[in-house]
Image (cartoon, rainbow, N blue to C red):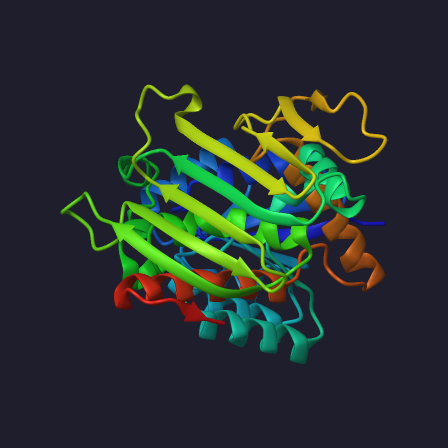
Length: 350
């Protein structure tokens, strides 16, 4: 079968270069074109990758026979571009969180459904073997009933978006919000998947340090799921520059029978999961499990490659996407509820 042709919409983003390496590792895809209005960014990208590059994505859609649009535009601009692609029968891979509002995400989902094209968003942490092991511990009762969870993601500082030609990320009208909007969605989606449950209420608080931009630097939330599990989120752009890899990541779950604790390495190559359980037959009761992932170039290493492989199969088989637009919408709705709660000082129910 011929590879599925891919066009990139937007290059003023931290991830397109990484995704090029990921796409190169999946024979089912070939990236043939890119569109970016910033001439300097566009020309630099064209020098590094042999693509046809356009100043506008509309011109690219007119001229290129695309099967898939990979959208890396400012979040506020994603819905319009996604709808235009869907109307042309082009499948959609939209970088999270998909839009600057839940309304925008819903319009994309409706357009994709009407056009009969696939819409997916890359929450690739679901593909991590440690995440899969935690999910199995939950399912087989190793943790008992999960009562509480923690999620911490402090990733870089504001200047990395300026240096990466993505300063729009620091303007709420274009991005939708700060670290909870851009980073917190990862953990919200992952915990939805791990717990196989939906969020019913949130209580949020923001702490703003910078005076230059209108987004928060630090966002905190208590997130309650329908079966009573409470997730504490600590999401930030204020990690010390000296921190290893510039990212402080943590996930933990506590149940009536056991606990798990994981501090992911951003490179995702060498991982350790601590688990302790009183569940019958779980011997030894405390363990440190080692996971070695093959090193791989590209965004999020092998995780994105596995996601893209599933995405290609779904497109060819006309089956459900590995991670749906509805999944993206759920995470977005939770984040927006957290922001409403932070503004009002009150719990917000979903």
